Length: 289
Image (cartoon, rainbow, N blue to C red; front, side, top):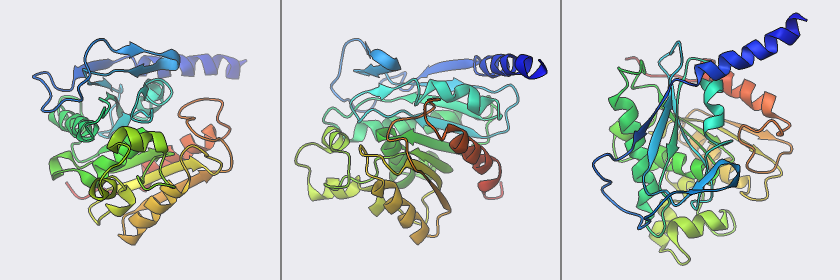
């Protein structure tokens, strides 16, 4: 009987902890660039959105913040955003651990490859701007992403223009990493850099080639049977990180395919949540403040 009563109470506690949220416009005075999209945002099935013209950052604040923050970039092939299971649905899980959690609704490239990364950089600027107000340590802010959102997160981790926009760690769900044909996800490649990109552009966004000793520590997870984004994306990125002596951990689950996010239907949800929770608690190292 006690166990039956405990589970609903735990669920209610998790939901309440994620209700303290605020949505901020990413560029209140106008973005420095454009993707050419105008009009109303499109609301699609399954919590997905498209035609994002006004990017935002939704921040969920925990009742007892531990100083850490995570910014999530949902996936969607650089064409749309899976804002539910790869975004807002994870809020309670993070905030119950004391982690400030934010979901980035970023703009699609639509022929302008620099636009998503500029939104990710602005998101981390905002998080650091309000760090004191939100009880966040500005040196403990991580970027997270799934699928194409994982590519955006890894882009910020490897291509960030300055220390001001460099994340302190990265968490990647079954990420697109490379733009090389035969390795990449075709839709993400086409939407980000076009049908016939220059060799320089392809090289720039093949992130396994952009890793340096300054790239932040990483946690990667994927399924071995992912036929949408080949596992070699994560494997090569992991090897590149280790080659630069960047702390990294890689979890490959036997089955599950692609796009599971926070869905209960993923067989190994208990495993990945447990392993990520432990990594966030014990596996990260930060420089002395």
